Length: 369
View 1 (cartoon, rainbow, N blue to C red):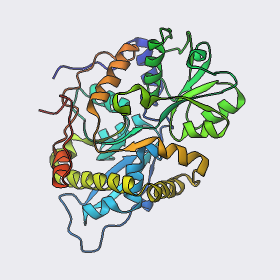
View 2: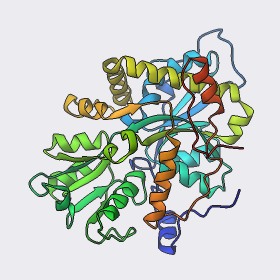
View 3: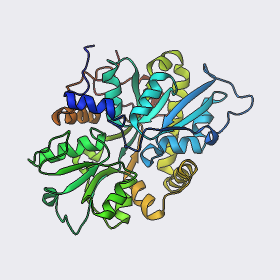
């Protein structure tokens, strides 16, 4: 495999050194928290797999609801038997990638941009994407008094979570498609792209310092609750209205040493997604309960209800869309053309899907050899 260079310019490389939040999935910060107290204990006397425990990581975010619900409802633990789960939550992609590299977690739910960046920076040696989890849940929400049409976005201040993160890349690509020009690093140009942490974006909107935001759920619905209007749902820009927002990654070392544990987690993920799709109201409540345990506050109905409806939970990692997202980052000048060959290993997922009578999924030619 040829080495793939991550981000290109010296200014962007400086950003990597000074901003650990670059290329996050959702841009909520960089701290991780041990969620072991919320993790169901292994059943007494249950048979252990090849590892005593599996350390998983995810975000306290609705687009990571497969992990939230699977842990909350004990669906992962049921598949793992006597092998216990140690769960940690993260507020940004880089910290989760660092944890994976350090062995602090074995398996993680994460967005496509940090997956791509983590893979390319290690020359394909630290992770594999082993499954999908969620699609959608990203919207352009604007102040309807200032922006009434897509053309009105020109000249306005629009927030994204972080420089180079998944939503930032998508917005920069959309801007280019309109024929407008913006300097990707500074955010200056025909549209002012304001990099704003999702936690503070609703306050920035209320104060009038931004005119809108291209953001994931539940931030988008929080803006709508403050009077914003959904001007564009990103899903409408993709074939079949599907694009990857959350993947499942694994340490290559853990995958090699404990494939039975990885397979059990994937069975839990597939069964959790099936339960979510069969019981959407119960699953939404379970996700909100998990969020309340993690943050101390549940999401109100006027936020979680529309947010939940806009996210699709699925097993397919939508590999072709990850490749497209990488191409968008290249087009924006944030990424040299990467070699993503080998980023996927869907062998165990397809084994699980086949055993459950489901269709196998494709790696779009980006599978491990």
